Image (cartoon, rainbow, N blue to C red):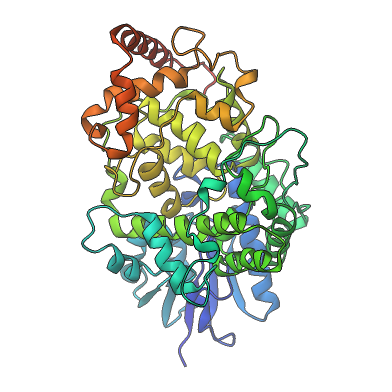
Length: 516
């Protein structure tokens, strides 16, 4: 009988992952390693590192309790060689397996490294498909074949039909519509009670990880404490149940809203569990659908939540594996500005940015509107180099792995792929932020003013962006109305927009002495 060394990565914490499915508990060994190369290829948020390591250690313990042999290498083990490749080679030399099995990773750089593992170990390495998703990379490539531009809505409808989620027996969508996004843009009313995400008190294992991370990575952007993430599948399932009962009913109406001092509103705070394997996308979508069918949540909430997972999450993964590695180098709008220093400090007079960045620093999470329409919108309007802002998103969020981060930021936020992923850039002035939040009333800038030093910078940066990028965007039919408005502004207003934008953008080039 053969003995297989089964390598499990930190975002594959699922007993049903492909590399574990054929495991022979009497012969095979599971290898899990904590290595510095993975903690530092970007300066990951300490809470993100602590979450992944704590979840890994709990998963290894569960495997051992099930009678499975686990070789687990902790970060501070003196023998740790601190890379996947060298730790695999060390384990192979000591354990002498007949072969190695691993599930394909979520990042191109790791897959590229895996392709050299057979040579390093002298053993056959089987890279198995990651079938935790609704759509395989092969199926996505077939769907995308021949299309000059892709549209998530069409892909989403195809998956709805294939999975049966929120579908009628006759093949029509529940409620007679595929998409209820138009119902999901309400500002948050005053006095509405807001739930908190499900929180878990760290146990001894997690406390040990937090001490290690604070010691090793305390200089990274972000705070490891307070730490409340679930780090086991059982607790992640409790977090899912909590969201469905407490927040899903109002998620749809207010999913685009923001509120000063309120981090979560009705958002799930589940994405880190999905992306590391503690939750499975099919069970999360099914839980939302069951809530609607029971009458516990309205259809616009269930559909809006399912679309984020069945639609966007699957779509961006397909784009990533279809277009890498060249996708990461795209810069279709020719952006050249370095990432402003305050992304690493949250020290800015723009209150909307300060709120989103401060939450990111404290929690290693923020919801999709904060990422898209505040931190992302600003980076788009300011012309930040895609590579730098993509690396920032990858570093600071606990749910960020390159397969999900890169297409969302480069394609959706920055429109740097020339419109392949999204039909238009998500550019907006301060009016959008004012409509969907109460941030502007507590900002030193005046959102009602369009130009001048006291005007909200988003206002003139929005028009300046359209002016500067007219060559790339002027023929986009979804921007026809903004460009007609721009043409009516008059030369004096345009000159003021250009002047104020140049002044403000020039101010971003300096950085305080203590900026990261």
